[in-house]
Image (cartoon, rainbow, N blue to C red):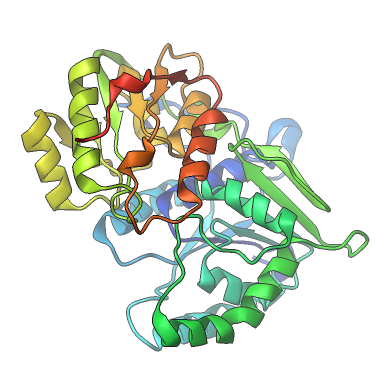
Amino acid sequence: MPASALTLAFVESPVQLLNVLEWAYSSGGSGESAPLLDGMPSQPPRGTGGPGGTPAPRMRIVVLPPTDPMSRGQLRRMAALARDEGHEVRWQEARGGRLAPLKALAALAGDVRAAHTVVVGDPFSRYVQLLLTLVRAEQLVVVDDGTATMEFIAQTARGERLVRWHRVGGGGPAGRVRELAYAPVSATARRRFTPADGSGRRVEVFSSMPVTAHGAMTLRVNDFAWTRARFGPPRLTKGTDLVGTSLVETGVVDPACYLDAVRTLTRVHRATRYFAHRRESPEKLRALSEATGLEIVRPDLPLELIARRGPVGRTIVSFPSTVVHTLPYALTGTGVTVAVCDIDPDWLTGSASPRARGFLAGVTDSARDVRRLPAQAAPAAG
């Protein structure tokens, strides 16, 4: 692959890799769907041209995997799909030891400097921000890492440093020293994402979220065209499926309140299955199953693909999360209803970020083509 033509993508989660594939497809990938076998592509096209013979993007995808087994397993499945689409995939360990980040940086530096286009899935990632200090690319693309894209757009518009919405400052003196030392890297990343007019650099956001570009930034809507072309439509079941969230694991929602909410939703909506978030702990899922009788499903691919392949319930109920924005796109025309249950402020933990309440409400309020559940559908624990 000639360096001058290199499009380089960095992903750290299965959803990021899915959205990189969606971006490549919308940017010139094959416009024809592959034949399907049991919901999975059968010999999908490899590097084929787009509509009108447009060459598909030449892309090298670098996977920077996290340490948890569920994420790594989903990433390996997604990497196989990416290779089937004709993309080169490189698995680069950047965690697991003090020297691992430096070794990875040295291994990737040449490609980063040579890339014409750089695609990133998590602009809040410190490792991605470190890589951005080496970027000389004319185009920088940000694809969704879930609802965090909404906060990314808001923070760059206000000129703020990039901080995850659920993160609470702390770490004591040592943490403050690390923040101070890292400040120049963070500032450089912020400048990369907000180029001045006339600089010649382009920043594109490719998103399913309800966001508005600002400054020299451009926006393209991710409507999950690749997912719809490659998978489904799904067979629908009569039951209701619940979608899990990692809000307990991130310290935002109280575990007992979450359990009571899931118990109530199960009873009210006669749910039968619970699609677990990849970060949910086995102990939490075991408690949910014992309290509700739900079948716990641990997906091996992002939920957008699982739902599109089917079988899936005629109603999918979720708490405020990425899927209330992405599933209506992925399941358009299938007859599936996506419903969202608000997070009661009383469920929030004392350690939750001050921004948590407003951010979660915004995720729900801005969702398109979803049904809002009545407040009594999942009352707070008492």
